[in-house]
Length: 176
Image 1 (tube, one colour):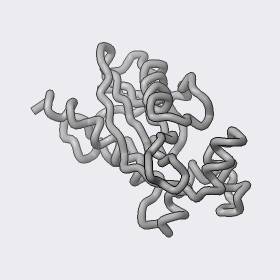
Image 2 (spheres, helix red, strand yellow):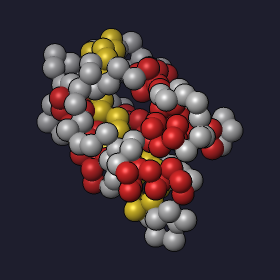
Image 3 (cartoon, helix red, strand yellow):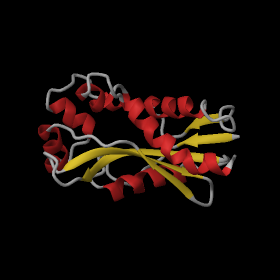
């Protein structure tokens, strides 16, 4: 079995590898990381755009494989929150015919980070760096801003694994 991942981000690739070890029918799959376009902005600003980005990454990496995974994080409007938005990770698994979607838990970035993303168009890496919350300009390839905000209690990898696990629900049921 071959599984393509529409990203070379080591956090996303590692999350897929770790989760697949929990599934007997998937654990021996060959995993290939492919840089695939999301065809959405660097910082998706709606749930619809985030889902579309994940689906596009899965579709654009589906080539000579059994499944392809697209993973995208982005903002979604959430009423009654401090900033009006929360960040969520979406995993889209494509089998060549249909998509299987999963989402992570959602969390709210600080107001200054949200402002940089929504008003200045920065992605979360740049917004977190510009706001002084991290010195790492590629925090999304490390613990993620969620890791900083939770003091390591929930890292970018763990948050990504939530989305992968919920997307695998349909594939796991189909293979029982």
